[in-house]
Amino acid sequence: MKHKEIPAVEVKGEAEDARVLFVCERCGTALTAPVTRVALPVHAHHHYGHDLLPPLMAPGTYAVDPEPYGPPWRPWSEIGPAEAAARGVYAPVPALSYGEPGAIVIAPGDARGTVLIPERCDGYCQGLDGRDGPNLACERCGRAVATRIDDCSLWQAVWLAPGAVRRLPDDGPNGSSGYDGSARSSADWTEITGDRLGTPPVEPSGAWSPLWPPAVGAALAHLVAASQGAPVAVPDGLMTDVFGHALDALLPPERPGSQVRTAALAGPNLASSPSSPDIVLVPRHPRTGQVWQPPRNTRAAVVPLAAGVWTHLSFQSERSPLPVTGGLPDGVLRDDPLPPHPWTPFRPGSAAFLATLARLPAVRRPWLREIYDRVADRPYDRPF
Image (cartoon, rainbow, N blue to C red; front, top):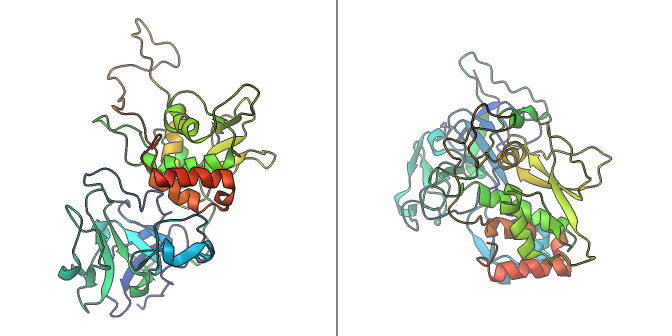
């Protein structure tokens, strides 16, 4: 049976649950296991720590990066503001990729039919970082088709070069691909509220989860832009730990008589705030990438936040630190074992903050550009 070809990076016309295969554009060798498309994770291009990180993508999934990816790179001095703005970048960045847009990322375990290109296997420390371009070739015809990333500080991934692969529907054992040409449907928000644990912020070792700094850093950029230069108040607790201290460091301090904007969580299956916040943090769906929208009569500015982080902030509460005798009152959870607590203050991801803020047109406003320049000059100063 002859496969029906699907454009490698086309979004329109792809059923949200369609399973596809990516094959070598030259010889047709299968390069992946069957995979289903999800949204590109917010932490896809951000480093963390100095350890080996887990795979970026869950098994059986893929995502597409709409922006150019990989070499060649051009420094800001060669690009200039006009050319950068045409690319959707409105503040100076060290460099921009002029590689091919539409790179497809999969988990390394989903790669098939490839071999390493030995002369392109350089890395910084413990693995491959892709500095020399595609380092995986089709095992049948030898064409360079993908880049394996597995160095320390980097999320393990295989990035397929869009011009070197074709996408085909997976016929499966019964000859049915599930691809029907219909448009991707709206996000099913019950998917992210079914498991209310979300992404825990602290690992058993006491370290912050590597998923939280880039997610919070990206949302923080939207929060600062939505502040209009005024102080922003957030709810006490974990929201203060991850957002409040950063907002206090970046925005003017609250003074008697000054306007203070309020921010709160909002989203599916979450009770409405008794007040009317000026800014709402809402989830971005991990499968479709859609941002949850509040009711139309809400005038609050909307700040997207990674769904796993939003879910934990929305539905998890701190356990009581006091011992309890007898029966447990309603709303009190057992305190054994103790919940994990971090051994350092939280630090939002400065790279995610800067990358997001640079792509917001509002950064061209003088007060916001001053914040951007301040962080860009000293990316490890408080709160980063």
